[in-house]
Image (tube, rainbow, N blue to C red):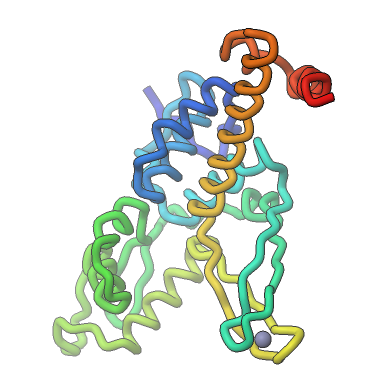
Amino acid sequence: MAGLNMTDVDLVALGNAEFLELWEHGYRLHPLDRALLAIRTSLPPGATTDEPVADWPLGRRNRALAQVRMLYFGPRLEGWTVCPQCGEKLEFEVDCAAIAATPLPEMERRVSARGGVYRLPTSRDLALVAGEADAERAALQLLERCTLERNMTGEGDSLTPAAIDEIAARMAEADPIAEITLGFECPVCSRASQEVLDLAVFLWSEIESRARRLLSEVHALAAAYGWTEAAILGMSELRRATYLRMVEA
Ligand SMILES: [Zn+2]
């Protein structure tokens, strides 16, 4: 059977009961695996992908995560961070619709730099280096995993930091949303800073709050009326909210 390409598949929102199952199954997983689970469970019934979600280049994964995010929370993602210099709260807003509309990385999925050829990193690659605490060593291990052809320029086996930077820059050109970098300028101390938005972590924290909100609504209505969890989760948002207001009144 020919696999469907994600460009042709619209992800679908889960019902409330399935949404709670997603949260439950993801609860003890690593953030990388939670992200993959959220994507897999949002594929339309019967849909298959041309390759396992874990083997998608990160931009393709982020694109799908932005789609999942829009299903439940809309396109406007708002968050905040702090200024590394003075601690001022810095707010940001990201348009998930723009991320979801980013063209998929070139089918080639390989970049040439410094005489070597490298493929674009995937979630599986990231997972395999996730245990390495040292960022430089992790970057090096990631590159080694992604090396298709070594450089023949006689630079030796060890990649210099400058070479790693250059290869990373080529990868970022080929897959621009593999890493979503936000730029800030502090209104208080004018310090410019950058931060990477980890869409997988951000989305999961939203999934977590929504799951807890659903459960607290089930709790309140079940305690007041004796209805089953399934009955309460099956109600429309509007009906549940209306009953909740009556219970609270
Ligand atoms: Zn500042």
